[in-house]
Amino acid sequence: MPEALVKTIQHFAPDFLPALARVRDPRNPERITYPIEHLLLVGILSFLVKAGARRNIKYLLGTRGFIENLQKIGGIFYAETAFPDTLPHGDTLNYLLERVAVSQIEDLRTLVMRALVRGRCLDKFRLLDTYYLIAVDGTGCLSFTERHCPHCLKKTKDGKILYYYHPVLEAKLVLENGMALSIATEFIENEAEDVAKQDCEQKAFHRLAKRIKSDFPQLRICLLLDGLYMGEPIFRACENNRWAYVITFKEGSMSSVYEEYEALKGLTPQNCLVLTRKDRRQTFRWINGVETEHERKLHVLECAEVAAGEKRRFVWATNIALDAKRVVEVGNRGGRLRWKIENEGFNAQKNGGYGLEHAFSLDTKAMKSFYVLLQIAHIFDQLMEKGNLLRGRIRETMGSLKVFSQMLWAELTHTVVNTGRLRALLERRIQIRFDTS
Image (cartoon, rainbow, N blue to C red):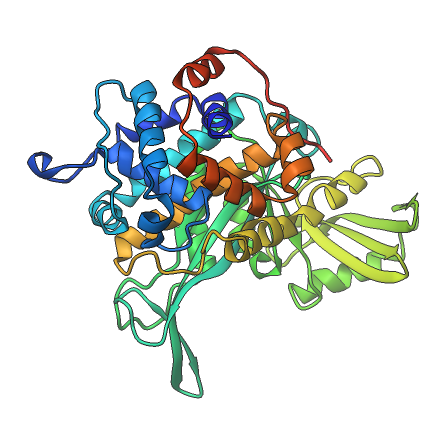
């Protein structure tokens, strides 16, 4: 299994492991015991085996087998660097991340996602064979009863401070097979302790959009957004970046546009499509060119669904022109996939052993880098789960990623990698295909 993990990383992002050694090390070279590539690799592996806390690195990974495996992997990818025969303490990793620029850790994630896009690994999941779907949403990350740092946001009620917290705005590339791959992060934080108005998701969105456009300037993107983002500033930002969008449209958002859609819907009975599949019946209705107060024309799509006796209704606003050939795909393979950032994304990271809400560090810079390392580990976990290299074994003998993580920990810590077999696997050219179910 460790060999399959290394092969998966090397297959999808061949430059990733070598890139760990190119991260600029700010430490005093005369006092370095653990090379930077060694520490970063330990950090990522600790998330892959669900260590859950910084101190658990010592207790869960401090075996002779794990140390030897690190040395063997290091001997292949970092031939000029000698990996020590001891395991670094979690505090040593924290010391490094307090000093390394967060942007360099984020560049590692960008390297992985660029490799996936350029390798055309995700092309078959594009919307309308054109757009990569990127869901954007915020979530709570860390919370404290007392102020943690000058950048904390604070939650108040009736003039009383309830708690301080550090939320993030996350962009994940979502696929209909259940993958939610982190592509960019914007940390929501105040510039100083006493600000007139706190930072928020809408402000962070514009910073996040610049980051995505800078990292992926040519990528054809369709953003999946919730109703919080219904507004002219977001529409304009997407227009300037030449991005498509599908936004959850609630009755209280842009009420005049919503009312006009409801009125026009009854006048265009031809814009209706009924789809029946087994125990599910969907009725799609749509109107193109509903005008906003800023003279922008939005296209509105509605899906009324009856499934297993339960009725649900979804409405979206989009800048993708709608017709009978597109509405099913835009609704089912577009708007409905926004929830994957919640379920396969945040929920998996909070309740699946990754420790998203755990404070791996109290240092402002280090906690951000730990967050990004977690995202990288989650990407590799999903590539292994959905790729056919280990998919059969995960389903038949492990049942879930949680059990898989336990098995990976057992093999990494108690079974020494066969260097010859690993080299042979790395040299072998194979194609890993993703599950499309």
